[in-house]
Image 1 (cartoon, helix red, strand yellow):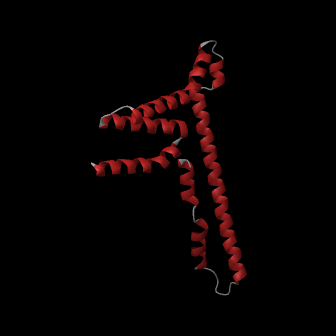
Image 2: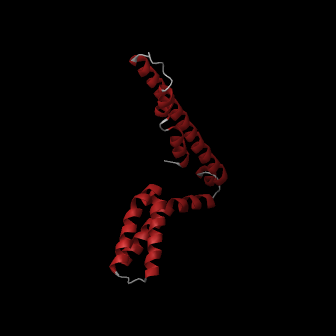
Length: 160
């Protein structure tokens, strides 16, 4: 969930319940249960509409950001127009993820099978792994793995 979506969720979350609680104080005493239910449904529809509008605004903001990045950085079709250099850059750009992934896999393999590393070197490999993990799989993967890594460090610190 992007920052804009989180803000929109905070801005609209629970609006119907809050509005209904306020409105119930002002309902006439002789209001029927069916009328109260209609009022509740109207407030829920209001919340759904606000949520839809917030989600639409978040989507438009993300699309605008993507378009701005494309304008600033260019696109693959822009690179393809450059005779030889464009093809090379596209190839290198496409190789980045596998290259970093396999390089990190190799470093990890050596780390676990052969190398006896200092604490600083191990910390550097942890950072490299997190950066590559985030680059290859995104922020969610790093967030999901971070508690495990923190637990490993806590166990290691407690074990010494």
